[in-house]
Length: 65
Image (cartoon, rainbow, N blue to C red):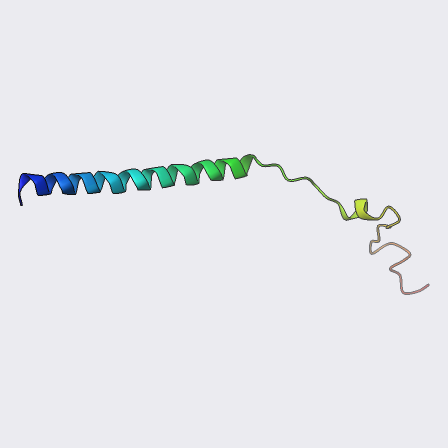
């Protein structure tokens, strides 16, 4: 191969490396941005204030009413 062929090969290789490096950096930045994002906590009890909590020991769950 001639010297110009090596130059073209080096240019193409560095171009591919740069593109992959930038894409990897963008992916890491997006992951960090997502990890800092706080989602609001929504409780089902906030939807309807008339809802009552029911447990096993609750009179609403007993079969011997």
